[in-house]
Length: 306
Image (tube, rainbow, N blue to C red; front, side, top):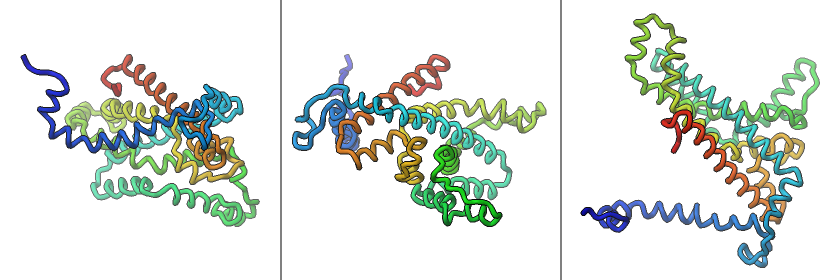
């Protein structure tokens, strides 16, 4: 009878286990041990007593977060921004991937793909500087153009309603090239005989895209959407912080959970409340990805993440 169990596997593949050991230690130290600090979400933290010595206060930190109205607002902003970014960035990436795959000239195709991919390598610090130089009230490009045509300058930094659009446009511009690479790879793996059969049947380019390209990309699209939905309550902190900064006039429309936690750590000594916001964010992300994955598994099990 063949031996089973962990010890048998360890003796049989001990070299592989020793190779993976440094990675396991790294994950344990950097990812799992810090999770013990989540108890701060349920404590009235005091610096003199430490994390584990501070008194328990139950769900008081969570109650304060939502009674103050901050919790609902940052949750709404985070979900809305991520939904818009999901639709714009993924939709544009699919469109760009299809257009690039249909280009005939190899040199032109490579140049176009490189130009579209370039913004991914630009830091959000630089992007924030671009945006400031465009919309700055005194020296911005937009207001200089308005003044040239005899129009009054516009202080965009005092109009919260326009910033969701500005943020989503620049997010799509930065990520469309990176996401399109994944979809181009999916298109490349499509059997060319399918297109040849369509040519024989007299199908035009739009029919080939609709009946061959998009259905073949479906598994990749669903996987990418599921991964993005898993982060639907995690805002891109660097993007929001570098574009908006500490402009209090825009917080109502642009504040997300990540920026709120960061700002709270800088201005507020109540670590318990910031820990509660972080735990709330992680738990909701887990619930959302589990629910969506379950729905996908019911509809088409092969497309689910697990």
